[in-house]
Image 1 (cartoon, rainbow, N blue to C red):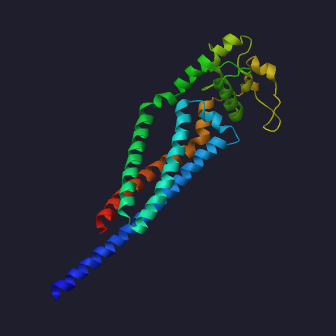
Image 2: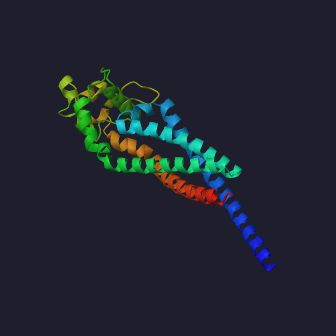
Image 3: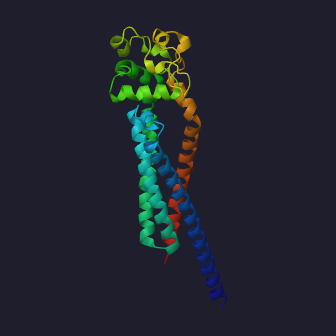
Length: 257
């Protein structure tokens, strides 16, 4: 009789533990679902943003690729979180195993992306952007993607060059436009509502009073600094949630009879 009561008590404790794991897994998967929704929202916003942010991203192939990676990862996490919630509540072993394998692949892919970002970080330096600007930027009337993108950046952020207007010295732009010290996109405007120039001729002649003297690298970094930290913190939290979700999935998988 005593053995039976002990066995029943042990079975009850296992059932309570399994139930606790099930609901914890549901919570973690719901958080993954929310994280995927956020990444989807960010990716879609960048692609359809009316303020030409997509043109800013297009300046560097790594950034452009990164946006699409964020969009793809957001979609997968959105679907994965939904399936994980269903698998936990219904206690479906097949669905739990599929969930574990899928989230493991995503986890490894995210780690690989972080490693690649660290390895190729030199492509996001001032020196790299300055070198590319001097080599490829042509001026206001050029129709190539590189030049039009840089014109959009300088007009949007009221900046000039990567570090300063001096970046155009010895550049392709000066070869094509020997009479202009800086591009027209560097010239100051009266306001964002009144797009007329303060004094375009003086600006093109190199007068510092009528041109934007701040570099675009620092302008863009300052503008998006808060968002960069938020994205980094979110990535760390997301990786931690995925790790716990895999552990709970395996525990629940083994506990289901």
